[in-house]
Image (tube, rainbow, N blue to C red; front, side, top):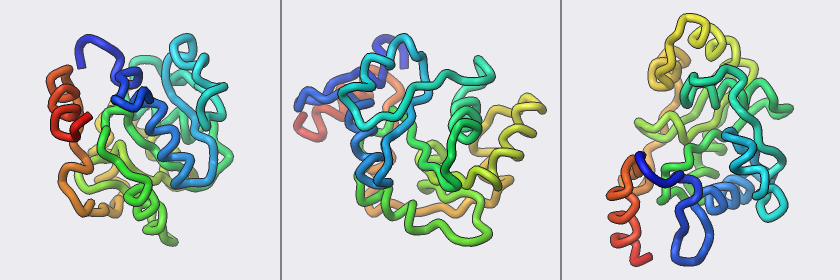
Length: 178
């Protein structure tokens, strides 16, 4: 999205999109979140959020796949919830549904058509992520297809509405009464 940082867009309740998603993730997992992004921009949020730390991509300019790589490389958890900041309609309940769908032999559980809202098994996914990055393949959808990711369908198609532009954010604010 051109213009302002999506993570710092504020809802009418005063919380930014990043604050809202950090809280949802913490509620769904029972753990503090890790933010993957510019540390200078987000480190000041550590004291106010259920956030463990802020990390920058290990491989710069590698897009969302680089963010997944960074998260899986630095985690001590086997299963890791990965959520993009541009999904304003997510709920704790839907994130818990994704988490509850993890099973033996599954490498990843994602929201239908949205690989940046999913649960990734560190040991099953990290080698594939590293191989993809090594080949210069940055498409997360190609990764989840290769992993045979289980897809969970949300109850509402609006749940996965993505905001890519300022107009998308404004439409979201109008449609939710925010």
